[in-house]
Image 1 (cartoon, rainbow, N blue to C red):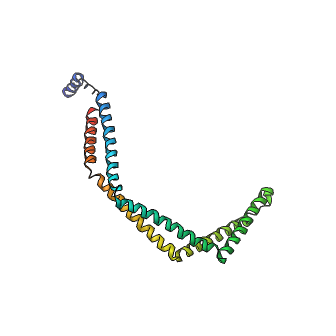
Image 2: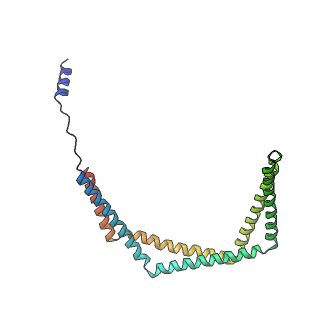
Image 3: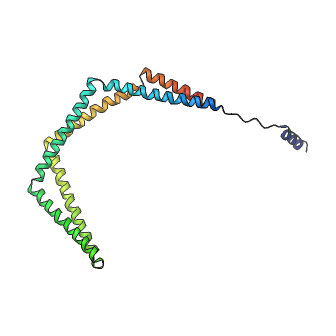
Length: 199
């Protein structure tokens, strides 16, 4: 009984703690500081990247990549053009046109006479189109893979792309080394702490 009386007394005498008031002016000020610091951080990152991108090495890498892309496109077009003039390709292309026309004819007959449509026949016609297209795709792949100019152009394109990626990775790594970026990063950290304490 004595214990319960003490508990009642404590509960009666305890006053609710006052609710903490949020300093909205300080919160808004800290929020603005965060936005400013983020803007400075972005500007510092751009400046660090531009330092690398303004070098002759980077400019040469971009030019080499564009030249490699043009060379690959030209080699690809020449190989494809030679293939499309071959008897094997022309024969497959004619078969494809005939197969597509057969499918379109069956769809037209189905619209005119829905009850007379044969799903099995339509399925075989569509499968024939897919089979011929697969043969054409394989023929293209084989022709491109065996063309030495396409192969050389592809390797040149891969090498040029890798060099440009290396320089861009280097530019990103230098961002954190920039004094302007480090200063903006510190300002952002301070602004975030002020925001947390203001709330």
